[in-house]
Image (cartoon, rainbow, N blue to C red; front, side, top):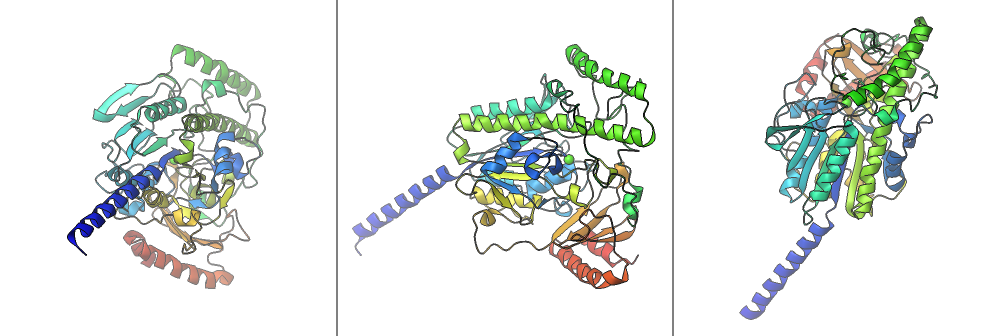
Amino acid sequence: MNKMIKKQLLFFCTLALLIAGRMMAQQRPNIVLIISDDHAYQAISAYGSKQVQTPNIDRLAKQGALFSAAYVTNSICGPSRACILTGAYSHMNGFKDNENSNFNFNQPSFAKALQAAGYQTAWIGKMHLGDSTPQGFDDYSILPGQGDYYNPWFVLPGNKKQQFPGYVTNIITDRAIDWLAKRKNDQPFCLVIGHKATHRTWMPDLEDLGRYDSVEFELPHDFYDNYQSRKAAAVQDMSIDKTLRLAQDLKVYDGSPLLGSFRIDGMTPEQKAAWHAYYDRIKVRFDKAKPTGKDLVEWKYQRYMRDYLSTAASLDRNIGRTLDYLDRSGLSENTVVIYMSDQGFYLGEHGWFDKRWMYEESFRTPMLMRYPGVIKPGTVVKDYVMNIDIAPTLVNIAHAKMPSGVQGRSFLPLLKKDKSYRSRDALYYHYYENGEHAVSPHFGIKTKRYKLIRFYKRVESWELFDLQSDPNELHNIYGLKAAAPVVKQMKAKLEAIIKKYKDADAEKILKRAI
Ligand code: CA
């Protein structure tokens, strides 16, 4: 080959590579990841809820996929977000509980990987990872800590703080849409929208006050669970009966000081007037009825459901606004949208509100995804996926470099029906916090048929459930003679999965006899 032909060949090869690179850059989809807080799948009509309609979340199910077996690695706010960001379990990313100080942003994350691959990145809304400066995001606008429902403050780059008037879910959506409108058009983007809703103390938007007042919610069949055979469940402090506070949580003000994250003092006089006009009427009715015993518990349950679902109504509406913006601006076709909660939540099951447990309602999380051209509309994904799979999946979608330390796996091959994709046969879970709500730390393994849990610190015990005959996990069969072979088998699986994910603390606890 003479020099001239060689030169020409080199030129064309380079040109072809450049064009291919360009095409890939254009094809790389945008990403919108919407993470809510404490939103139960039982409160979503696409997941079968009969008592509530969530038309906008359902749009994602109709146009994309609903994940019916999406789980979290540690069912609590900040730690779940840390797992989503890093793709690694809490013991690896270091953010084990909400009482922890700050998330270490110096570690790899999907945001940094996407940024390095040429994506514009932003996080808008609730992040709840402590006070350290976010890394991996070109722009951010985050609520400090839990943030406020009304007239919330935001932390902006350069540690600037700004207060925005109005209701938090609307403001987060406004700011997200603003960011989308102002972003550069020549780069793909990844936007995380972190909603505060539906976190305690479930303060609805003024326009949603009373939305569910005419609905009598059915009690879950295990509402009066007596926790027999489950030591840890018996000592918790998260029941609607004993833990839910009349004034703070249910807004039946009795004149005592209001504590915690419940704040109405930040409201404007107009907001306060509308708020009181609604809740004061409820207090009058409550004082007149003076419910006691079972009547009081069930009254609390109805109020809890009404406030929770009214707060969720605004969340669904604002997801709709976000989807409408993508449609209007022609972005929908080339934008992956994922909606998920940071974990599941109890809506009266076992008599509870809150989360934390490895039991299904809090271990599982709602998750839906729209990806035009890849996911067939109306798909239901039954394979196990976890919150630690989000990071590798997004990195995969963006053709970015996989960050080190990722323990989750990309489910993109599953969505593309790649035959080489192997489904998970078991899920590993570890919850650490040992404070508010008195839920004992625990870890465990779930297979399709069984769930084995080891509680430690507050309560030292084992639990085994046969999910086929006991899907609501009411009968702990650990210790029964007939269950011995299953216990042996499940303990071996647990030991192996602990080793696989390098959870040294759990490995030590496993060796302790109880
Ligand atoms: Ca949460």
